[in-house]
Amino acid sequence: MSCPSFPHLLQEIRILQSHISDTSVVVKLDNSRDLNMDCIVAEIKAQYDDIATRSRAEAESWYRSKVSGTGHLPARHGSGRDVRYLVEKASLSRDSDP
Image 1 (tube, rainbow, N blue to C red):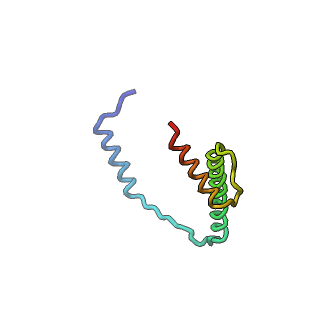
Image 2 (cartoon, one colour; image 1 turned 90 degrees about the vertical axis):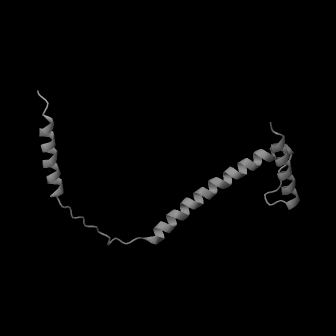
């Protein structure tokens, strides 16, 4: 099996390019479909709710890990004084970590 010569390859490339340049393409789009915005909004809301739930769980886990050394956890809706104390305690703990 012999390799074709370089001029022969150039001629074949020209022939292929002429076929490509003589080709036309017509594309038709069907944009008649209706968008169901209620479905799209509901899907986005479900995704947002999922992200918010995971973020809340992560924040609560982080909070509990920071205040677990304080000896007590404030009530879920505890007083502002308890929250300030715990934030200060967590900050001091973080500052003293190596």
